[in-house]
Image (cartoon, rainbow, N blue to C red; front, side):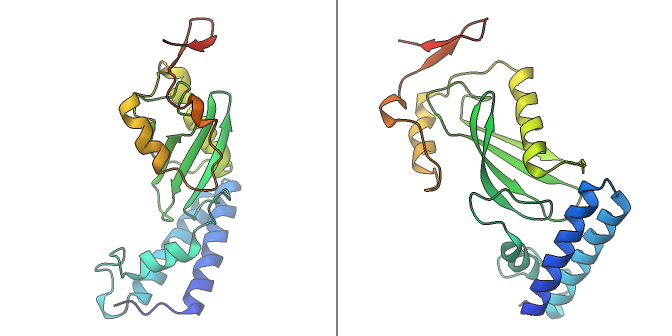
Amino acid sequence: MHTVTDRDIQAAKQIARQFDAAIRANESDAAQKAAQDFRALIVSANGAKGEFGIFAPDGAGTVMTAALAAKDEDVPHWGQNGLFVLETDHGRVLVGFTCPLDICSRFEFNAIDLDLPFISETGFQSHFYAEWPPVSVNEAAAIIFCQYAKAGKMTNIDPKYRQGRLERMPDFVQISSSDFQGVLTKTDSTGQIGFQF
């Protein structure tokens, strides 16, 4: 059982701010130190279990990362988890970001406008990211998503995935008109988008 206190959470928030500042300043040693400090804090706050189960449902790491998370719709900084809308030249994307203050972060890209071509036919793409670039989380997400869009052929979302995606869309996301959510589109070689019947 964890023994996380308000003081621990405040310390975690300070470490996360240091982590973000170090990454944005391209200071990898400082980012690494912040990551180590966070690990030490959650191990200490995990009580007698120490390292064991720190990210279990009732572990100190789980409690602290939840306390650090950005509010839905706000772009998180490095060291925060978050869920936000990304505007790109290839359409709007709901981005789920997980950053456990270590070397590997995860971006989850979810289609918002389900009638438009996306980077996968399921309307979802996961990407593990083992870099600390000196840019914002928003900028990193845009770079990764656009690399997927340019490297592969944008494709229509298979209709069998659309309803499920629509049902799991968070309330803060404004979807395009539901009248068009079931209409397939296609993109020709010049980038023109048209309806597909």
